[in-house]
Length: 70
Image 1 (spheres, helix red, strand yellow):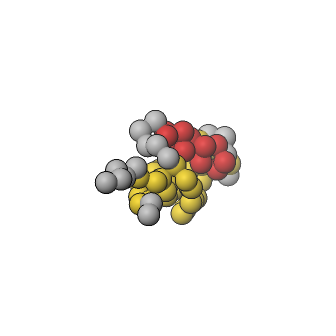
Image 2 (cartoon, rainbow, N blue to C red; image 1 turned 90 degrees about the vertical axis):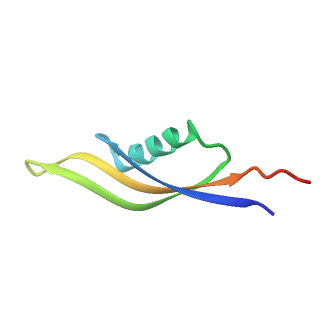
């Protein structure tokens, strides 16, 4: 039976929500292996002078934990 852990990651981008999501995944992948899914829990945008200047996501990343078989 596989064990799955979930971590929460916050990431931002000046381009788009999609780019912020890709950044969240790329940063998590630097220290986590076996990533199986990413769930965007929340999206936020910062606005200045009636224009969006940055995008942010709060993501939950699920990954399978390696377990030793006995």
